[in-house]
Amino acid sequence: MNANAQDTAQDVVSYMRELGQRARAASRDIARADSGAKNAALRAIADAIEQAKPTLIAENRKDLDAGRANGLSAALLDRLELTDARIAGMAEGLRQIAMQPDPVGQITDMAYQPSGLQIGKMRVPLGVIGIIYESRPNVTADAAGLCLKAGNATILRGGSEALHSNQAVAACIQAGIAAAGLPAAVVQVVKTSDRAAVGELITMSEFVDVIVPRGGKGLIQRISADARVPVIKHLDGNCHVYIDDAADADKAIAVAVNAKTYRYGICGAMETLLVAESRAAALLPVLAEQFADKGVELRGCAKTQAIVPSANPATDEDWATEYLAPILAVRVVEGIDDAIAHIAHYGSHHTDAIITESLAKSRQFMREVDSSSVMVNAATCFSDGFEYGLGAEIGISTDKLHVRGPVGVEGLTTQKYVVIGEGTTR
Image (cartoon, rainbow, N blue to C red; front, side):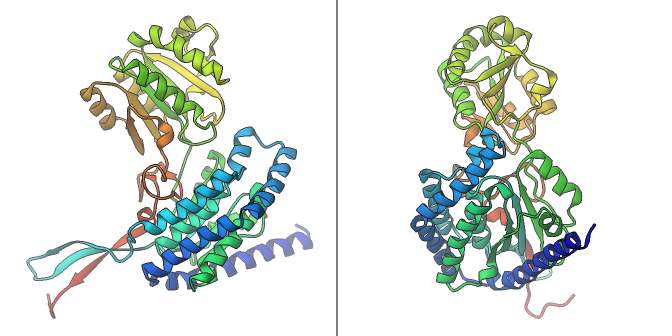
């Protein structure tokens, strides 16, 4: 490593450690802030985002132009784009977070023990949360709002492809925080695109309590392997819809088409359609026609191809792939047990759905499919914090500890025991 490179690396380390020190100090201030101050900040950030819409779109256009020039995929460009609707969604999400109950300080499960002690649990912030994400600049606002409401300080490191957009959103966040009289370091957006910043952030265990990575499978695997800080993981969304023997045909067609085509680039998009053999001959031609109208390529098993000759042959890799594109794997299965076995083998524990009118089948599917969200007669694209009433989400955890599914405000807190006595001794 030459001298200039060494100096640059040291500059990044110093910069990140400075952010960490500021965040740790700010975490103590935001942990004791009352709900009124936090909600005022959230509403002020929302106002600032709406007022800055022309600036946000202009800065986002710089990132989009650079992304196209650098060959970003259509799915990543879709995630990167800030439209009028997405900017409005950011503001609305922040206002929804402000309207939610504040979990910090809530005491539950208080009960007297034989010793005379009253013992329960209090919900408290995690502390400092580091968030590493790709493409989506709306994550900057969502993550800042959720962490702030949960009483945490946060360090946000967005992808280099969204640098201009993220800094424009960061300016709105700082304006809102200042208007509410909270410390600026409650939310810090990393200004460098140097990848060394990520390596430093995930190893600063003295300053950072939790890391939340949002992005492609490669990013999350790298973070999980290298981090010295606990990680809340969001792995790929290889989501399935299973059309059961007892499915209503109209519901099955509507849900399957929506689950795939609502938006291709989201983690809740259906990537594999499983169809019970007894329904395949009637439903697959209708579905194939609708998918063709929307430009979706089908990759099917031998039974699917026999019914839909236009389908390309599916490989074993197709069953395990999160396409994030207008491509759909289709497999004809014997029934619900075969469908559940397929999901267990190839799924990513994200979101899976069954279409059925059978209560027994729906209960079996909900009980036996081991995913963070399991749906009955609903499209997988509903797997989203906003749709779940969380206001926004920081990600969808496919882990089992410490939180699972869409991670909202409560998922960014933990609990401690509180013990109340009256001079009680043991």
